[in-house]
Amino acid sequence: MPTTSRKKVKEYLLEEISNNGFAHLTLIDPDPLKIDISKLSKLAEALDKGGTSGVMVGGSTAFDKQFLDSVIEEIKRGTSKPVILFPGNIAGVTKKADALFFLSPLNSTNHYYLVRAQAIAAPIIKLWKLETISLAYLIFEPGGTAGWVAEVQPLPKDKPEIAIAFATAAELFGFDMIYLEAGSGAKEPIPYQTVGAVSRFVDIPVIVGGGIRSPDQAAKMVAAGASIIVQGTHYEEYLKRGDFGSISNAMKETISAMREAARVKSG
Ligand code: 1GP
Image 1 (tube, protein in one colour):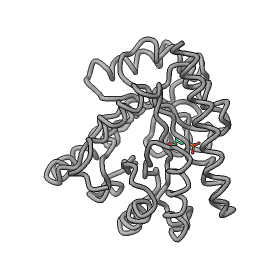
Image 2: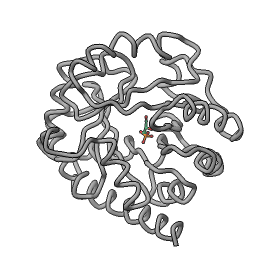
Image 3: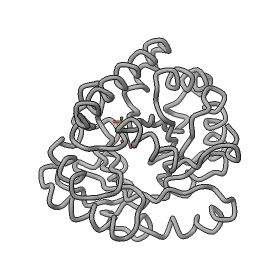
C-alpha cells in the first residue's frame, strides 16, 4: 500500500484501538539465522487473513541491512497492512517501512541505547520523511536478549509501582506509546495485574509483548487494559513447520478471543 494514499500508521493504530478496543501486531525478526525469507510473503498473507493489524520488523541482533530490506519487500508482497520498524540499533532503520517505532529503552543504564543511537539516526529519518511513533520501551525481568543487549536494569514484574513510575515519566515526556516487554520467547508474559495497573494510570496506549502464546493470554491482556498486543515467537513456531493454514487459524482464534474480551470490557 503506497504511503501517500493511506492514513498515517499512528492514526491507523489509534483507530483500530478505538474501533475494536485493541490492535494486534505480529513481530518478525529480520535475522537471516532465524527467518526463511522464501516463506515471508506467504506468512504475511496468512497473518493478514488471520486479522493482525500490522507487522513489526526488528530484533536485538539483526544487522544485515540488505536482508532487512528484502524482508520488508517480501512482507509487502503478502499484505497491505503497515510494516513498522522496531529497531534494536541503527542497523534496524530503513526507509522501506511505512513507519518506525522511534524507541528508547528507558530503563537502560547505557547512554548509547537511551539516546545516542537514536541521535545518530534521527537526521536521516527526518530527511526520509519516514513516519515515527515515539515509544518508551520498558523491559521487565529477566530481560531476555533485548535487555541484555540494551544493558537494562530490568523492571520487577511484581512491583507495579515501579512500572507505573517509568510509564508515567514516559507519558509526561510526551512519548506516543509505552511498550511493556517481557522479552521475546519469555516463558511467562508480564503479569496481568502489572499491565492493568499501568494501563489504568497512564493515558497513552500501552503495548504488551513477550511470551504471549495462547488466545486466552492475549484476551486477558486486553481485559487488563493493554491497547496493542505483540506476538512473534508463537507464529515463528508455526512458520518453522511451514503450516500457513494453521497460522491464519491461530491468528483468527487470538483475534476473536481479544474481541470478546474487549466487548465484555466495554459492555
Ligand atoms: C518481543 O514482545 C515481542 O519484542 C514479542 O515477544 O516473541 O515472545 O511473542 P514473543
